[in-house]
Image (tube, helix red, strand yellow):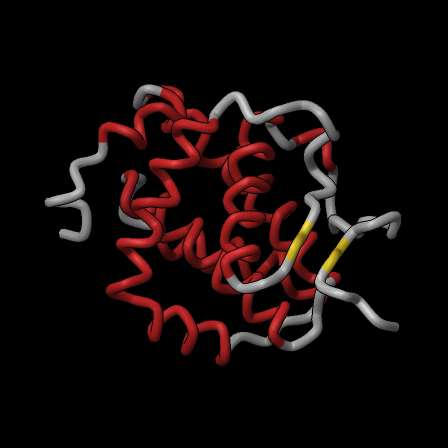
Length: 176
């Protein structure tokens, strides 16, 4: 089946879980971030998690997140690509794999830099899937990241200024 670089146009979405556990603001941020990163790699993806016309009320934070992610990727892209190459990536293993990586990443606490790293991991994994024509897995990545952030990270994010808090991250000390 020819894809032409567009995913989710009328296809059934597989999410491997309960969509009700996802905060709509988190879904917006994750979806916009993945759309941005995939479009940088020549792929137009439409998130199943955002309702059309909803608009992103976190656009400014998303811009800041993308800038931090670009800085992060400039230092660690090879490591993320190597990690993606080593993972056993299938529809039935995607959510547990993402949760395992996140649990390891946040095992010593939550910080904005680790949240950015989690976004970078998800986007690199999505690009990895796109490059291997595993387009259906991108939806699972979006869902899995959104669910994890909603369930495990959102209280911390809200206690640290909400998504706008990422705008205050000091770029100079960010990677230390």
